[in-house]
Length: 305
Image (cartoon, rainbow, N blue to C red; front, side, top):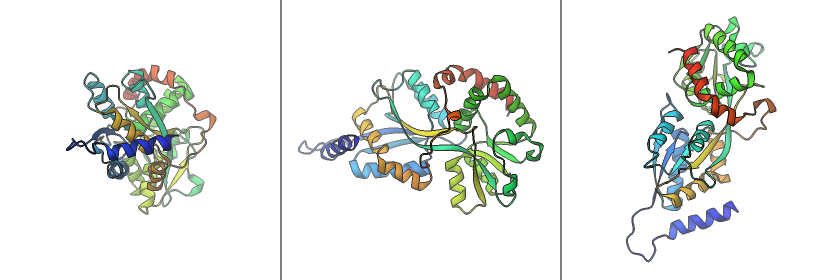
């Protein structure tokens, strides 16, 4: 049904304005936290296929999705964005909770990434590969682990999920012990992955797409799953309430979530083939949303910069 609707919408987009003289170019405004290297080719393909111009705003590695979310909140009374293409789920749910997304089918999740450990195989023998987060507090990893500042991006969402999964006390003990083991805290998951690629760290806590990028560059790096401590990260695409170009926004949403687009994102390394999530990796989103401000405050205190 989606394919039929998309076909009709795309056909309408291509024929729009015929017989009506000169018309203004149709456009759609996208705020995207999906990495530009992955998103830009698809957005250009969308314009070529539909004739709809895309004006895209991308985030920065340091603050990742949070910067765009804050911008959308600031613009709530006068929306400038039509579509928010987010490479995680938590911040999209925040926007929905605030009533900033359209009421009918506000957002759709598609594809997935996962949190993983990137290990330098030249420095760490397979027998020593860490199998989970708790092992990273062992003295043998002191000063050898890289990770992104956990107040932003997927690291933040992962740590919030672990807080829920482990419970307050166990989570806080782990955080303090981890900090005491002198990990290398950097601005972004890709930075952490590159430290491992260069041998400046032996292990990094990162995302599967960042791991794939350095692996494809020929770096001696392998990904180790976080069994029982992992986190699934779908892409989401949402339409803003009061979007200036709602019709074009819907056409773009349908384009991004169709099978062909997903396959291209998987081929590029932006997304993984779907893996059945373990039961222990499920998240109570209602609880996470209600507690996140308090837990983020704890993270700021625990991981001082």
